[in-house]
Amino acid sequence: MSGFLPDEPRAEVRVSPNFGPRRDMLGPDMIVLHYTGMATGAGAEAWLCDPASEVSSHYLVHENGHIVQMVRESDRAWHAGKGSWFGRTDINSCSVGIEIVNPGHSLGYRDFPGRQIDAVIDLCRGIARRHSIAAERVLAHSDVAPGRKIDPGEKFPWKALFEAGIGHFVPAAPVRRGAALEVGAVGAEVEALQSMLALYGYGVEISGIFDRRTEIVVEAFQRHFRPRKVDGVADGSTLRTLQRLLASVRP
Image (cartoon, rainbow, N blue to C red; front, side, top):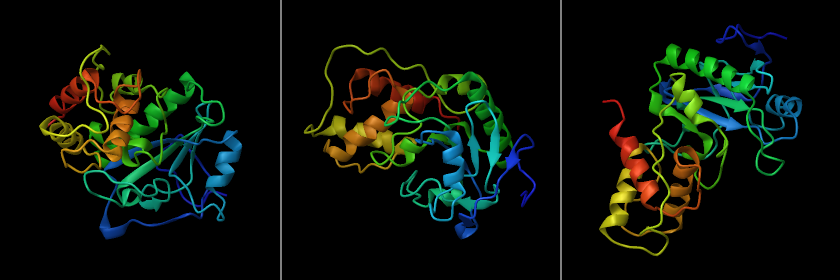
């Protein structure tokens, strides 16, 4: 069953019934990357096309690099769930979702094969070109839903995507011993940290209090941009990496 012509020429079409119109006349201005978190790619593909699941994504990328499109880019797939970015909470209406086959943390999380990442890069390149998506708006599911989601996780090769012209990346500052901000800290330094996270797009309240929510958001930031150590503690490495990242955002 075809159903529609694919937006991505390489893609096979398998229509999911789980979609609707984008709300508020929004078009996609971000790409959200996920892992499937299921035992097999075939199982994930079937689930995303099952009306009982009430979930979908625009694309699924199998481990061998095969791409399946399930929802047209012009439509709203149900992939992101509850989340936010720059205060916008209907992530599904403003994004293209890509599910990447990987069993995830609960089923034997493993490295992403090179053929799969090559396919993800090509797919993202086409989506970004079609919708003029900025590099810093190629995001992880964990970025837009901190704490609720941790995919595609710390093994995802963001550097490889960046080197191919996809996404935003800076080399992480080295992890060293020293002073750090963590749960219970209060004051101007915490407020500055929260302000920088919010300025990049993360959903965090600027309160000057390092609460559990701030810890969760720091973990999400680390998982994407400083994956060597994901602990929710804003050490010097985390702060310097965040500062570098903000300084490198294109005007």
